[in-house]
Image (cartoon, rainbow, N blue to C red; front, side, top):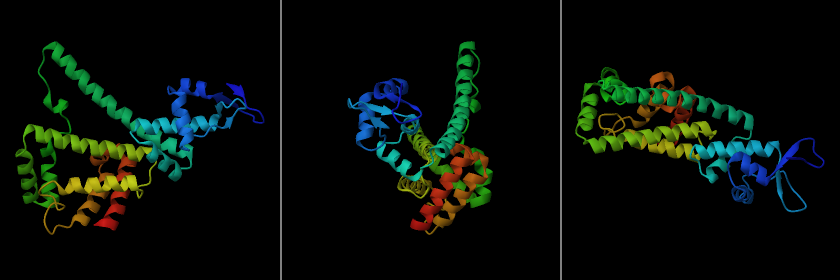
Length: 261
């Protein structure tokens, strides 16, 4: 670290930044070439130097990379979210929600390990919490009728174990992609979120018995109703990282429904 000529604050060489951030000088040079992270100055020797603002930008890049976003998507986030502090605040909220979720998962796995070591009986309800599709039977029948539940239940039970696992993985991937998008500062009306909304609607229409899957059904009304439910009902909001994530999903679905349904 050294003082920057003509500036009050210090800056760091590209080698220092690479070491501190756990990345490489080559990666930082690539970020510079594509306009994602410019050095604060270039010395007479051609070396790149980075000030505090540049480090803040790099922190955001690394956080978004961990969420699975590609470099073009990250560039889009920066264009839409110019307030770095606000964006990091949203990301911090998402990290806190992820920490809580991972803590619950760790507790569940730890209990399973202790049960196996102790020769005790497995508690299936705790091992597979959230996977019982019958837990909402009464609610589904009340909202959409017994026929709707019967069709979806028959469809689910007609699947083999592999098909059920693949369907769960598809749903889990969609949920994790929503959480990543919500935590990244993307616009709900932007192309990335709207592609997720398209996938979400396709997922809904693949489930027999729902209004979205029935011929002549009110797909738009169903999607709009679910979108609001995701925010209003904490059980559904939890699937998207809590209420902030659920609001992001709702807003994206509302925009998609108005445009395409």
